[in-house]
Length: 180
Image (cartoon, rainbow, N blue to C red; front, side, top):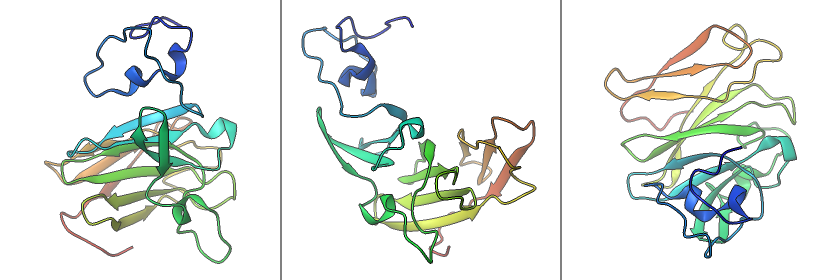
């Protein structure tokens, strides 16, 4: 793998790889994170939200960077903890994006506890659940890995292509909603 930003031995987990402007790392100030980062979203107010790669079955699925070496569960510890009787938690996350309204859209593949895949919108300005869009069949098929998303603010929709299917799921995204 080519080292584009960091020249230190710890370059795979380098803080400079997470920076919004992708500045070149000086190589001497690298600080490794405790887990492997999957994807990164930066909110309009410059919060750095990232998924821990699900391949390693992390306890904290999604986190917010609080310093160059520390993070806290995002949106909170409850949403990172599976519970019986509900699917309002993050199970197996790789893809996430932030939109211009401060909503972080998180794709939960649902593999670990065998729940339906879903797209979770968390409003970072109000610190509350914005919306959940479920992706049952035929939107996803058995073995699909929905993990990438494009947010289309102009047409108020999202497109989530799956890794194992040529089809894509489209979900309308209302401008303001608090229902699930």
